[in-house]
Figure 1: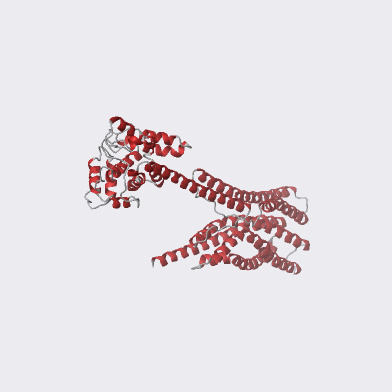
Figure 2 (figure 1 turned 135 degrees about the vertical axis):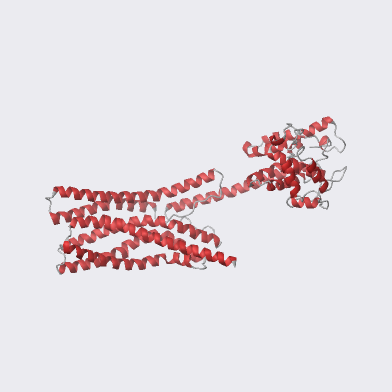
Length: 543
């Protein structure tokens, strides 16, 4: 029931998005029409001809009838152009074929808008207008010379080209959110990598050449045509009026050229800014960032290649992360291999540390660093002689001092690994995991919050595993007893917050039936029980 309701909401949102998109296209169409047809064409020609009185009513009627016919024809074509997109957005279910068809149609829509303006828009207007104007001239309702109609036809074509240019760039902008939603539909349908795959629908060179030609040439041609008509109608003796008229025509032409140039500039600037923004995300380490393929020109190839590069970098980063994780695990295994009684200690301590970190609400990056630090926390014991590390009897003071050096040696070993910044996050925890909360630990005698966070967490995990693991001279103590010792040492030997979090995560004190395997399971499915690298909490290798 909930699933059906959620599906219904999703369909409603898609249909609402389609209607919003359709309204945007219609609004853009009328904006382009007002700017090009009425602004550049109508106003200039109207003022040039100086139509007045009854003839003004006739011209208005001719224009209205022509506009009605044009709108009817263009509406049919407009609907057919939107059909694949409408079918996808209004349907309850859709196939991969329908998604790809809608995606391709959305990319083609700006070019189809140009063809619509040059086709049914132009001829749906100019043919009825010429026929009605010729009839009006024939019956004497209009006093226009026949060749004026030819000039009007040429001017209409030029104005349609201006309109088509504006419509193209406005449609490019309008289809962007639709393309994003179609890509979302593809992801939900399990279709990955929906793109043009580098296919170019509108070459940049062609777009630039035609845009510059239309912006720079057609307003001038319109100006020349209107000048010819004005001189024919009014003669050349009205210099003051001619200056005012020329100024008006220039302002209208410059206004259109500026607006069209701004649209062209935005069309080029937008993909560059998006690529640059994604590059900045990648530079900050976000290898999941990609640029949506919303372009039908050569930027589509650039976006496709850029995204392929990011995917390759992400795969390489994952491989490097796996290699690094394997490197840590290998180091920990090499250390455990020196003492059969401590096998698995590093993995178990890492699991317990993660339990504490998750309970403390640490973020993913910090948890990962904590896990790796815990794996390497005893790496310094590689530098301790076997005669001391593997000794089963009581340690002398000198031998115990050697054991205590493993924290500093571990830090020094990790400092030799390049790049240094890759190891920097692990050094504090490795050095300080034997510090005590009351300041009686080693190597630096730090206390309280001066002890690095990872050192305080690993100290709890390390001590618990030391107490519960089997030794050659004793068996590991019960879980409940170890938890009680942690509770009693909370605030003196161990950080009270992390000790409590660990005790709670383990089920609390009093769970006398809890086994070693239970504790290992809580640590994330690590090996149950096992032998331990620590040999006591006192002077007997309390390292």
